[in-house]
Structures are given as C-alpha cells and as structure tokens.
Length: 269
Image 1 (cartoon, rainbow, N blue to C red):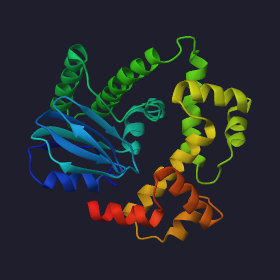
Image 2 (image 1 turned 120 degrees about the vertical axis):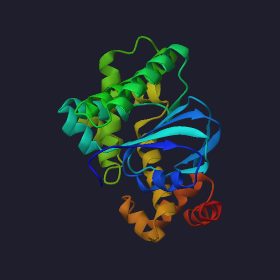
Image 3 (image 1 turned 120 degrees about the horizontal axis):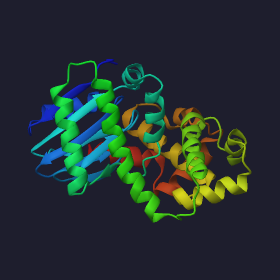
C-alpha cells in the first residue's frame, strides 16, 4: 500500500471506477462537484449529487454504479496520517469511526469552509503541510454530522458518555471476530453492562450485542462478495463455531442465506 496520499479528479471516464476499487484499503474522501451518479458501499447504493461528500474506511467494498460528471477522490493511508500529524492522527481516526453516516450534504456556510480548505489542499499538494491539511479536512467532515447527531439525541448526554461510545466502537472494530459477548466490552470499558447498553441505545439505537452482530454480518457480506472463500471458512474466520448457526443468523437478519446472497451480489456486479 502506498504511503503517500493521492488526489484523483473525476471527469466522467471509466478509469475512475478502477481507481476507487483498487484503493479500497485506503481511507477515501469523495466530493461530488457536478452531475449525478450512484455509489455502492458494502452492498448499499447511495445517490451522488452535487456537493455531497462521502467518507469511507479501509475494508469497505466501494465501487461506482454510475459516474458523476465531475468531482475528486482523495486516498490516504492510516500510516501517512499518523506519521504526518504525530499522535493527533490517531485521535482523528478514532473520531472517524464514530461518524454516524457515510456522507453529508453541507449547507451554504459549511460548503464555503469545505471549498476553501480543498483549494488550499490542492495548492499545497506536494508540501510538508499535506498531512495537517488532510487532518483539518477530516475534522470538518467529522464536526458536521456529529453536530446533527448531538442535536437529535438527548442533550443531557455527558461528554464522558459520548467518549465511552467512541471507545466501544473502537473495541468492536478490534475484537468483533473473537468476542461476541457483550460483557467483554463492558469489562474492557470498566462499566456495568446495563449502563453501556443504555448509552449505546441512546446514541446508536442498538444494544452492544446488536452492534457486534451488525459489524460481524457486514464483514460476512464483504467476504462473500470480494473473496472465493467457502461459507464454512468465512464462518470460522468470523468467530462462529457452528456453520449452521451462522447460516441461521445471516438468513434471519439479511433475509437470504449466505450462498444466495453471494449469488445475487455477483449477478448484480
């Protein structure tokens, strides 16, 4: 994986499709500046409209279904951001995990800030300040949806509780394959499980168990569509001891069996 970031301009040609897929292991910021299109992220399709901003993390399966006319794709690695911003980069990426949506539509004032920062980024592309500028761009993307999320939730939630959820999501990302038990995450965060579940439902709308299961099934979908591994192999990789139980859970929550899901997704591609 390349250490240096790359900025690609979308001009409506098919080679951009390959650029996005090949760098799916990078962090990606996609900004649509003109036209309409469709983007597929982890088997879900999203409409591309002018000024919409998308942000994607390593491991997500990303591809264009229909290209917009113009826009930009910014690729960068975790290694680059941390090396160029020291410890601050780690905190930025932790915040990134907590963004509640995969895209946002900036209002007029937010769009001015975003455009200004992007113009500075382009002008300083080969300078040492590149990492700092990307970090500021991520902070802008993080602040907007966070503000929306905060307004839509109980205003009495304490800062400590939001921090707790950030660390919960981080731990789920690290351990979801090995640990499916909710009590493990409560113990890691040194809080009673009932309290962690209460806060998780307030902020994320789901219990700890459901958050872990949703992350596991998301990875199952990625493996089913991007690898040739057998369903039995995927079952064990994701920490399920019984393939029949994995099939049962997948079908209950996704509506189809893993094998049917794989067939449907390959046909759609």
